[in-house]
Image (cartoon, rainbow, N blue to C red):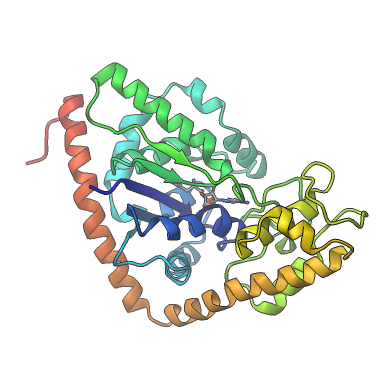
Length: 332
Ligand code: TYM
């Protein structure tokens, strides 16, 4: 029996190079050896105000981006979160088990509520519980994510503990985070002390997976670097350059020392020109495939439907055990 992998992305903005390097690039590798569930977190997107028409269109767009990035809908179960009502249902049950003290510690809640002062809704606060429900419904072994999700994964493991204390073992599997050593936190291009984020207001801070080559080149060439000249990796003192070297390393397969050796005596500008080319070579075909897929909503609907049919079987089996354990009467 193959181990179960599950991961997803919140349907806001567009996928960035940070999402690709920290998450989807690994999802793609894992699809060969694991039973993978990859979903579009549209319920999570509702924690910030969404224009209904844009949310709908973006859900198709994210699905097309997943497929264009190389996720095979035959090998993986790819689905939309809201199509499986068990997510919201289990989230409520887990909400009743989670002490608010644990939610108060979540750094992403603090950051997001600072950004959304006019809309600090309860969903923004309980968001990590919905994430735990996403993971636990599928008896997930491993959750491939970037560094920013580590704390949410730890909370998910705590929630399994709260459940076991109250109802015993056997209903949920304890999941592990799968976080790469390299590229788990890609930084903003203009402000390398901050993570690259798809909800950033300044588009110069990120490269999108579907940016055209000209934009990619411009953004990489204008990335902030220090005033030094030597191309060496030093995340503390040369944060911008080191971020570019990390992207270079993950996309080219070269180690950091190989990159340092390659650029002895060269200037930061040389590295930027080459890196822009590497990013364009990686993302160019993705963009073309994406544009093609977006012309075919019927196909995207089919992928969503077959993914949801498969996901529902597994999710509903778990929820049935949850009903049994908690004393809720099973639906007839
Ligand atoms: P989201 O949509 O913010 O990000 C999707 C994935 O991309 C990773 N990531 C990054 N990795 C490296 N560098 C960056 N700058 C960077 N920015 C984002 C994230 O760590 C993530 O793996 N809450 C999640 C979606 C979610 C989920 C889940 C994930 C909902 N339920 C259950 C796993 C399991 C989120 O908003 O990710």
